[in-house]
Image (tube, rainbow, N blue to C red; front, side, top):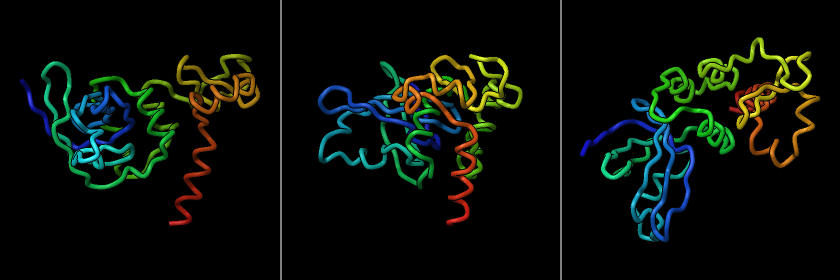
Length: 181
């Protein structure tokens, strides 16, 4: 049985059974991991408040019959939207440390253009997968393809909302948030 301690950010959570929860964490040392936390959904659970999506924490987990989260202590907030965290959970590889992405998150210099470039999908020269003419400004996560603003409208709305990262709209919203702070 191996025990690990590292800094982490909770990306998403799922119920598992009546009382347990399954959590996806992005850790500083081990990359993305998914683990189970026993009894985390009990009303008296002391672990549950520390495992909410968007929470930056110090986590302790073990590898015994899968990954189990044993302990967590909240140290702050990631200050990212829940959709950004969901998309990160979808695009990050399991068990591979991504130090550049981690630094972007903790220094609050997060941008999807840089994240996708680090992960191997550089949007700088991306062309639309559908028309092949215009610049790809939207990343369709399930198929790992870029689409221009006109062609992405052909994707059903519900799919667009849950699986398309708009690369340049997020930059504008980040600038608005920076001005407000």
